[in-house]
Length: 260
Length: 215
Image (cartoon, rainbow over all chains, first blue to last red):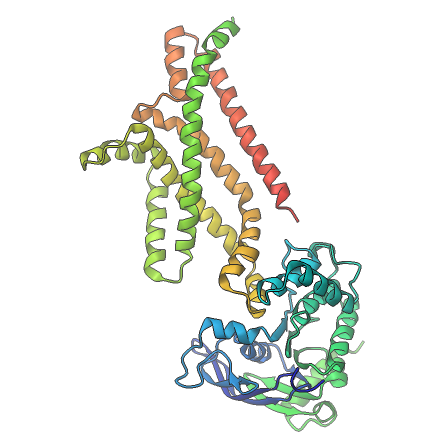
């Protein structure tokens, strides 16, 4: 896949405040097109907040997030908020998958996927339905198209959510702890789907606590702590030979937790 | 002795009066639902003064007894030169008061829809109007249905208050007939049965709607 179908993201001097709380401090991060970037770090470190700044679900106050050279959320000049319409246009090519799936409970799996195709892309209902079924087949749910979310397992729901985002043919996919709300035995099926998507050359940013997954799939791993980007490096370096004591400490608690 | 014939003889009068009960509560419901929706949107408005006015409205109409509101409308409006027939004063009072409650029921239901629902839609680039129409309102409607039916049933019952402004609806008619026949037990049992039938029908309608909205 060429970079025409995959976005690059450039985060420069990003700062984010919740009232007086400094949630993100001077973050500089390059996310190359077609690559997988995993964000790791202790809870409360700001990794989800950083991810949510990329599609401006979270507003930031300093610096900029540029997607293919275009600042999202704010006007490039003057720093005023960009028009809602422009923001919606930019979001069309950014898919997002949430920890809590956020499927719409009053719609079937197929309707969940087709909804934005009709409402945002303006496809006909028939065309949207066809695309929705194809997207669901791709995540292994071809037999669940008519099921409502409450009839699906957590893993299946998350795969529907992935299909909903992917059906829009985004150039960038954001995953916010996609397996954290799942029973352990259901994590694998979701990670497999994400891994398959990664191999297609889509740009992906994944907030995760699955270190094994990050080590295998990521092209680069960014470690955050207390709102700061401590390090961004290839997974081998972060996991095998961490330069910073904070990363070492984090990985040690992670290993300790997973021993039995 | 329980006198069935008293009920049978007076049933036509009771049914005649029931028409006013239905008229006042039906129109009151319609007005209340429409006004309630408008108020709910106003209360949720990000524009401060709009939501303030809506909150003030709710406080007043929820805080003052309906009977007092009715009497106020009945005496106050003509005194400032607005001459409306008692029936319309009654419908307006009931509708405006119900609107305050309905607005809060709808607001509660909208707040109960998890934030992530709208967020997922916004992340896909959906227009706020579409998010309301396709994602939030359908879910809020289902959540609000039990309380909404409750409120509408309550409304049918409080419609008996409009007799205070001279409208002869079911309760007022029952009072008159029982005074004339000295048969209050029979008449009030008949009136109770009529109210019950109306409200069972409403509850049934609500249940059918709830089922349709089920997922």
